[in-house]
Length: 393
Image (cartoon, rainbow, N blue to C red; front, side, top):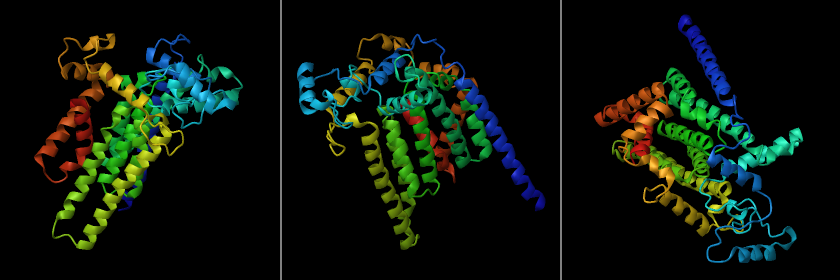
């Protein structure tokens, strides 16, 4: 017994040391060369987002005026807010200077949480250094790239906790190490785009679903709601995450129909999970309202009517990527075999061969176990359902 007790602390120290090494290597690879383009703004999406953030809070420049002339829309705002030159409150989608549509950048289809965080970080950097460049076009992208690198470091840590929760600490270390060296993750860490933050929030949401499946508490439902809202406020196409929570909650509720289960236990578990789903929904709505305010019209925080301009931008973006639109970004898919082409690129260039092969093998093995239906097979349902559903559908 003393020998076993002594082995546990040593094992914990080994895991902690290995995790620190992974994080140190990962941070070096992510924070090195953040100014890789030497201020030339070569990334087109990043360049657009840099223009958006550097214009936030400035004078109004209306776009996407929907039937009214932009002059009429500007006149409406200046009449309503004459003391600020038309710049309205934060939640006023029609007049807020933090709405990309109102500062000269129409067809904004990204979430607003990442640019808000970049704006806050840039302003903080200006206060600390006294250099106004960090809040402008030629500096805010460097701040955002540092945020992307930081977010991806947190993703590495979150993956460790997912692996440890699903299996053990060694699986957590393996997951963290493989993702640490993934080429696409390293690339996105060097871009001032929404992707690294969206990945972090998605991974956090999956961690909470894993915790919920394994007897999580109400706080895990609340945590999912916050992470899910942040993911949606980064990329609205992460909406399918809601299906993973519904699946996990359904699996927890299903055994309660066993007649042999005591009524008091059945009532407690049913109430806890139904209440958890309701709480997750409420938290998601409130957090999304705050993080992505221009999905709603406002003008106050309780103005929850969907914003027609935002809906139109989302529908336009959906059309542009549907394959029906004749646009240059779609040409890369012409004549490519469905599923095989993206799968090949994902393994070779996105995940890297090590993570790609092991990841998809693990997914296949997990799917096999789920389909066999033996005891404990459903413990892998979260990654199997999320990866398979999002990739195939």
